[in-house]
Length: 148
Image (cartoon, helix red, strand yellow):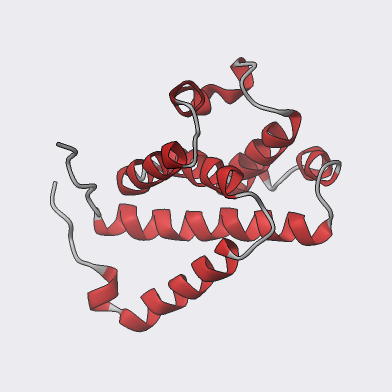
């Protein structure tokens, strides 16, 4: 497969707007390691190879273990994630699959057990932002570079 086009070249204004969203979530109070788990899990659901590649590498740089990264798509079946992470992963899945889930109240309420309204909003913005990046990556067939 080949990349269809580069969004930053074809629509630089739109790409700059996306970078603005990214800048907002990068400045949030949510720990970077948790933000990377959100990015990986949404990217797995959306089958965005470019983002999976990028964010698993970033997670490893932050000290994330191979075991947790490999098990992330089966997080419910493992003991490797905290209650807070599980709540955020459930919300990530619900928001990513919003047409199917409509983000159930119990999923939202579980996140609110651990995070205040501002933090919850920041988590939602992180989920929304990675989903937008995934849609760009999948639509344009953005390809990850092959590791050597």
